[in-house]
Image 1 (cartoon, helix red, strand yellow):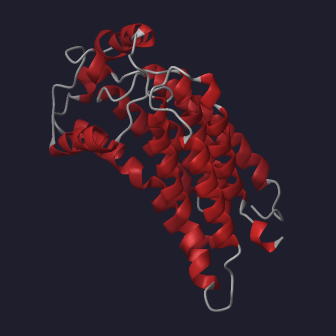
Image 2 (spheres, helix red, strand yellow; image 1 turned 180 degrees about the vertical axis):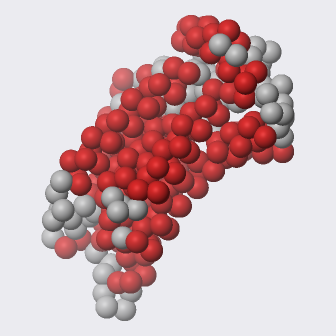
Length: 288
C-alpha cells in the first residue's frame, strides 16, 4: 500500500510511541499517566501515513521537504511525553550515590578548578555547547542538504536510536538533577548570560521525570557516529561533532545539569547508534 511507504526513521518513531503506550499498565503509581500515550501514538501514526500518501506531482517536493524536518518536531513531542511518567515523589536513592562520584570528579580531582582556571572562557564555552544541543539535529540535516540529502533518513535512524533509547529509560529511573538535590554542592562559581539562559529554558521547557541517562550526551555522540559514516569523505563534520559531544558531556557535569553517571549511560547508549551506523554504512544500496 502506497500510504504505508514510511521511512525507516518514521517507523522507528512510531515504534517508540507504541513502546510508551505499552508501558501504561506497568506504572500505575504515576498520577499523570492515563491513556494519553495511546492517543499520541495514533496521532503520530496518522500523521506519518498521511504525509506518506500525499505525494502528487504538485506537492511532492513540499511533502518531501516536510518529511525531512518533521522528525525533529515529533522528537520534541516524544521528549514532552516523558513528563507523563512524573512520580508523586522522588526518594533520591540514585542521586545520593551519584553525588558522591561527582564530588570526586569536581572537587577531589579538581575538574571545577581547572575548568574555571581561565575565568569565564571555558565555562562560557561549555554552557554554549549545552545550549546548542537543541539545534544539533537541525544542523546535521542542513549539512546533509548540501552534501547528501538522500541520506537524511539514515541520519535520523541513527540519531533517533541514540536519543530515543535514553527517553525509553526515563520512566525506570525517576531522578532530579544535582542542582535541585544538592544546590550548594560543587556548583559552578563562574556564571554567564548563557548559563542564565540555559537555566531559564530548563525551568520553562524541560521535563522533570528524570535525568538518567543523559539524552544530551547520547544524541550528541549519536550525531557524530552518523556523520562519520554518512560523510566518510568529509570527516571534519564527524570529528567536529565528536569534539562537541565530549564538550557537552563535560558541560552537563560541570553545570550540574546531569550526574557523571548520566553521561556514562548516555555515551553507552550512543554506542548502539554507532553500531547501527556501521551496519548501515556497509549496505550502500539500502534505502537508508
